[in-house]
Image 1 (cartoon, chains in turn green, brown):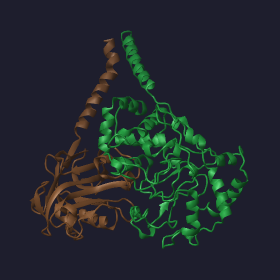
Image 2 (cartoon, one colour):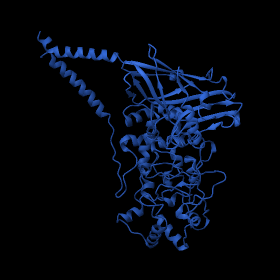
Image 3 (cartoon, chains in turn orange, red):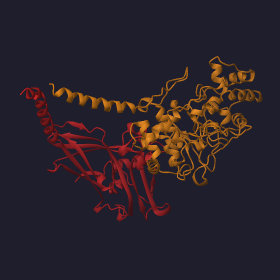
Image 4 (cartoon, helix red, strand yellow):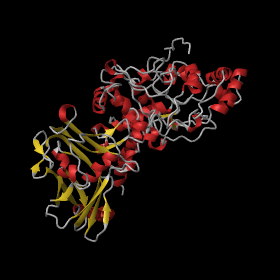
Length: 353
Length: 238
C-alpha cells in the first residue's frame, strides 16, 4: 500500500495535468440574443454553438479573398456592411474575370430566422449557403477542394481553426460552420422603427401615416419583425430576356412556381438599392410605381396583387417616409462586423435614392 | 505476498480484458467488391464501349453513393450498419471495395440505398464520404448527386458529343434514392461479396433512355426519377 501511494499520486497528477491542458483550450461561448418579441430562431445553434473564436474565424473567412479563384473576391466584396451586406448601388455584383452575377446580392441580416436561402430558396441550410457563390463560375469561381487546400497552406488558419474547433483540422463542414457563426451575428433590430416599437422614440407625422398605410397595403407579404414572410411570390415583374430567370421554378420544376421569388426583407431598404431579384429598379419610387401601374399580370401573379396595388402619390410619399425608419445605422456601423484590421471607416458614398 | 493480494483484482481485470479482446477478435469483416461492366464488356474509363442500343460510348466518370446498409443474418434479423455512407468511384479502385464489420455466424442478405437519405440532404454540411468537396453535391439547389455518369458518345446531339447524367433529389415526389435488396445464397470463406453493376441497365432496366434523345440530366425531377428506376436494377450478386 505504502509503495503504491506515490505511484497513484504521480498517476493522478498526470491525469489532472492533462485535464488542465484540455480546459485551457476551451472556447468562449457566445449566447445568441433574440430581440424582444421576436420568434425563436430557425437555425439549430446546438449543432453549431456560437463561440468568440468561431465568430472570429468566420469573420476572417468572410473577408478573405482566398475563397475566390483569383484571390480578389471575398464574401465581403459583394456583401458590404455600409450596404447592409448587399452590394451598394449595384444591380448585379462583380464576379470572377469581369463576370456579372445572375441576381442582385441580398442584404445579409437576421439569417438565423430563415429556412431557405437565395431568391429561389434553393439552399436548405445556412451552413451550405457559402458553397454556392464560392463555386459559381460567375462569382468566386473556385472549387471547394481548392479553397480547403489554400486555407491549409495558410498557417495562420491552423491556429484559428484550432481555437474555434479544438484541433487544427480544416474541412468543408468547419468552413461552413465558421462562416455561419459570423453571419448569424448580423442581427438588425435597432432601426428607428424598432426604437418606436420599444417606446424609445416616436414617428414624425409622415412616418406615422406611412406606417398606417403600410399596415393596410404591404404588411401581408412584409410582416414585422422581418418585414418578409419568406414566401415565394410573383409580383408581376416580366422576365428579363437576358437573365431568363424563372425564380422558384428553377428549383421545383413546377410551372406554378414560374417567376416566383422570395419576398425580400424591407429592413435597411433605403440603402439596399437597386431593388428586386435582378436589381432592375433604381429607386423606391420605381418599385412603388411598378406596383401601382407597371405590373404584368400573368397566370402565377400573386393573388394579393391581382388588381395591382392602388397607391396615390400621397400614399407613396408617406410609405417612403416609413420605409426610411427601417434603416438601422447601428447595424451599418457596428465595428464587430467590420473587416478584421480595417474597421468600418469605409463609409458609403452619398446617394439620392 | 501482500502485494499479490493487493494486485488480485487487477489480475482478474487483466483476464477479463483478455477474454473481451478474444471476443472482439471474433468480429469479422464483410468485404463488398463492386464490379462495373456494361453488358459483356468490362467498364474501363476512357475506353471505347457500346451500350445495348448500339450507341458508342466513352465513359469518363462513374460514381455513386451506397448508404444505409443493413445486413441480414442467419436468423433473418436485420442489422442496420450505423452511419454507413460510401462513395463508389470507378476512377478510385480502393473505393470499389468496402468493408463492414459483423460478428454473427452467417450473412444471408444485404439491403442498401443507392443515394443518400433525405435527413443527410438537409442537415447542413457533412464530412467523410458526404463532404460536398467530393463534387457530388448541388450547391445551388441543396442536395446530393446520388449517381454520376459522364462521357461522350457519337450518338449525343449536344456540344462535344457529351452525355452528362447527374441523378439525385430527396424531396417528396422526386426522391431518387432507391433501396436495393439482395439475398446472399452463400458467401466465400474470406467473407467477400462480389456485386456486379451492369451499366446497360442504366439505360434500359425500366425506362429506355437513349443518349441520342436524352444526353443530359442534371436536375432532380421526372427524368431523374426515370434514371433512378433504372439504377435500382444495376446490382446483382456475382
